[in-house]
Length: 245
Image (cartoon, rainbow, N blue to C red; front, side, top):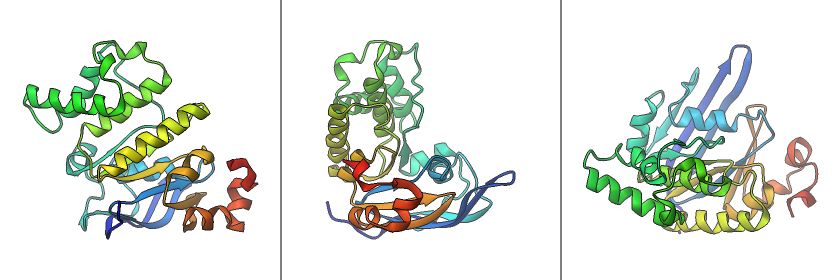
């Protein structure tokens, strides 16, 4: 799909935890219709950035703009209702509830009508391929299925912007290619997607543009080829481009 103007902007955001600077004056734009990747070593600030964008953390400095509106520090449920949803790095389904009820919890953020919420949840489960397991307990799902459940919950919020936090972690090669196809299918629905990931063979095949964070600072951005051939990125993070294949 075509890429438009900025739907989400991060303006000079700084986030500190005591004496640790997790994000250091980070500035970036996410364009409407884009499939953007954010990479960097552990502790680079990637998940912290997602937490600031989605209202789980409030920055000490800077602003988050969504469709030109300042959403900095709004509570997560308000940001979700506005059109920004996310998955989490550590998948934590409501284990004793059914798969369908897990997604219903998210759908009820959009409507108090049970029939309407159920239809939203079923649509999301069909989209990710979990509809046949809608009545089983979430605890019985394997890792791939739990990741799909996490994704279905995010999709049940009808997002305009979807943030995916290490969704490929723990997947084998066949599962990685399946995940790429599913995320591209989501993107084709008109959803702007931002992916944080360490699995380079996954993200290099998926995204249109890459941003690199190291020690809370943005050190590079550009096309996949530009970033993966950037000497600063190779030295600070990749070590060797051959590791991507």
